[in-house]
Amino acid sequence: MPKKLPGSKDIPPAGVTWKPATEYRTGDWRSKRPIRDEEKCTRCLTCWIFCPDAAISWDGQDIHFDLNYCKGCGICAEECPVNCIEMEDE
Ligand code: SF4
Ligand code: SF4
Image 1 (cartoon, rainbow, N blue to C red):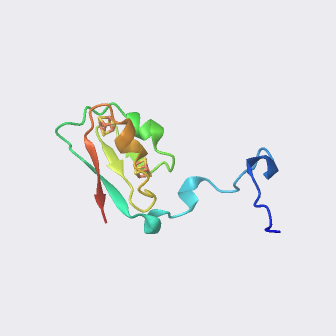
Image 2: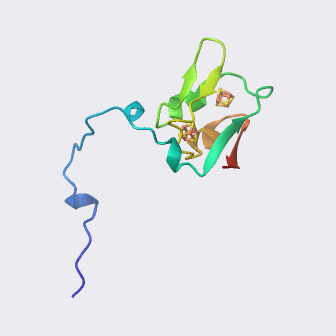
């Protein structure tokens, strides 16, 4: 009989990582990178809020993508209210 794979209920609750996301360079995994249209961008920071890897920073005037940590998930592009981020193949 095949071994049953663990499901979500088998994983202990409140699992934690011992380092923040910025301790792991995830950029090497990326197959797509975010490209922003700077003219269209309104600097609303929605992408900054949603990025799960803290790969988007704000310097007070503009946003910046840190490709050392961006893993190319495309959430920023999905959430951008003016659709000014395109995901481009690496
Ligand atoms: S969500 Fe879109 S418009 Fe807003 S700051 Fe990010 S790229 Fe610019
Ligand atoms: S593609 Fe994903 S990881 Fe990269 S900047 Fe956008 S939301 Fe962050």
